[in-house]
Amino acid sequence: MLSKLLGKKQTKKESQDDVQHELIVQKISKMNLTDMRAYINNKMLNFEVCEDGLVEVLQRLTTKNSETSKRYIEIDDMDSKIKKGFDLVISIASHVKITVVAVEQIQEFIELYGDIITKYDRDHKQIYESRLKDSLSKAISNVGEMTELKRKMSVLGE
Image 1 (cartoon, rainbow, N blue to C red):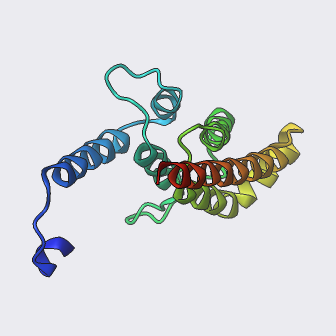
Image 2 (spheres, helix red, strand yellow):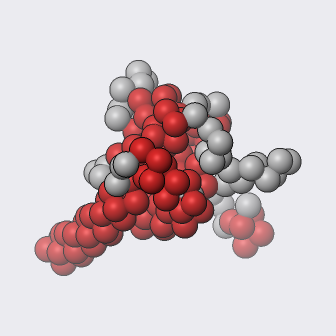
């Protein structure tokens, strides 16, 4: 859209990327937690994990419903749904294709669901609060390492 305003022509690759992104958004919007986990673990046939997909899953978890203003996971949801949501975020944080945007979404998830995390840990004698924070710091270090590696590769390539 911005390229149209600036008078730039979209290349074929950019339009294919836009179509691919829309397809990912559409598929993830229909997934439940089990499907999202299968997608993150790359167990869905003909639908490979990508950086945009990780971000879309996290956005789905952190965005409140515009009509009801409810979160995806609420404090009165079943324990299995809460646990699946926490485990999904931890597996995204340790994923190879993690990006800076995904790390920011994980931080937002931890802030948004702080009350549920604390209650779940207290009620079930779990340590999800520390596990989520540890996975976040590991994701940050992984992103830093990937950035450093890309920088070194670009220096070597020039």
